[in-house]
Image (cartoon, rainbow, N blue to C red):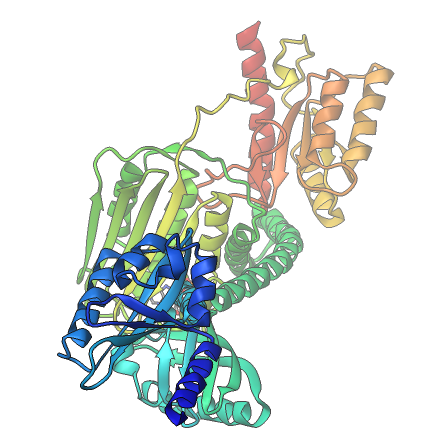
Length: 640
Ligand code: ADP
Ligand code: MG
């Protein structure tokens, strides 16, 4: 009785289990299935009578679900082992496909000691597997993000030990994971950097989140700036920081500031240069005027006057450098074979440097023409060579010029084996008046002039240098892109208009100049030279004079001597007025914005008339005026 009621108690309990329980006999034939089995057999549409009871276990399974052959085989073998009592129990977890849906089951087969047959349980583990898969998936996502991030991600402990870092961190710190693992992050920093990081870390632990900047010196000696955002205790005792390399951005910021500063200085310098040039013209003109007449001065006074002139010329030289820097110089860009230009200059520069310095030159074959102003390049080479010479005192060295060809530009490199310079110096060399040389030895204008000229030629200049390791200046020049179109529109004066040929003296000259002192001086000199002078203070006044002359029917001016840059219509206004009135008058431009001693830097004036540089001397003014009028006469007679 007792055993019977126990048996039904057990059966009731087994039937109440939420998973399938089957009993098989020694031949693996199903002899019993609990309620859960019966339910699932119905749901699975086991097409065998009595939900498979009385049939062999494995074929029953085969009839309703598909299992990987290897899994099926393992279960079959496990069952055989248990039935043969080779093992007490067997367990296997397998995915099964039930009408196309994958589910997971654990099959547990247990034998009863000393009895034949076995108990088989089917425990569904699909949910656990799904959760596991979701976890694996999420991890894979994080891993992908972690590993491909441009920003560095680093996980560390309370005492700043490295736990994990992505490849970007390895790149930033210049060290592989293995080298970092479990090390204190402060160990890869120098003392000052470490101190800074420790302080920020303490703050992070206190506040829970922190952002800031710190620097790292990498094993190769380079220093980078890292910006970070950190969060403390994302799990207790673990902190995470995202790092961004802002070195390049910071450098660019510095360069931008530098460029803005240079631009501001350029404007200032340009303004000063303009006014100063006019002053110099007056000084030089008057000195010249006095010197011109021997009777006017004692020998003593003559000498002083000559000194005044010499000093003024030095001043003019400085102004010329300043105007070059402030981009007020107009260059004439033309296709130039740099290698032949450099070769030419090199032999001249040979004399500039002492015997102990070797001057070397090399050029790639077939370098295409660059679009430059030849005189400007010569000036640049001269300035660079002067600096190189100063950097190689006494003990000799080498000054090297190199021309190289690139797909879209030509480079010209000037290097020396001199003292080199510190980073602070290198960053400032283009500033006007920046010099490290003794008073009287350096003006600090050489490199600023080079900079200005390179800008105007749309070139680029890079300076590499280290103390004791010499200096390398590399310039990129643009190539000639297309054939230059020729400005064929000629001066209207050359149109062969009949004109009255004036006598060599007494010719009418219209003088256009906005600076009163210069205009007065020029008037005086021209009048003394026998010309009749009409004065105009700007382009508009000049235009009115020309127009009035025309309608009055009087003889046209023989020459207009005009400044180029003026308020109220500059040289262009004068040029237009001549054209509008179809006057045969010739032009002579006067400008302070160009020229060096060799006189072959021409500014781009509104026409190709001759140009006289400021500051001029009385003789230069008279000569220029004479030859402008005479050149015209030659041209006129030649064309008629
Ligand atoms: P200056 O030669 O009158 O000092 P620059 O504008 O030509 O003015 O040069 C500015 C500064 O740049 C120099 O005083 C020097 O410190 C540095 N410098 C320029 N070129 C070189 C060079 N080749 N080697 C070392 N230092 C240089
Ligand atoms: Mg110099």
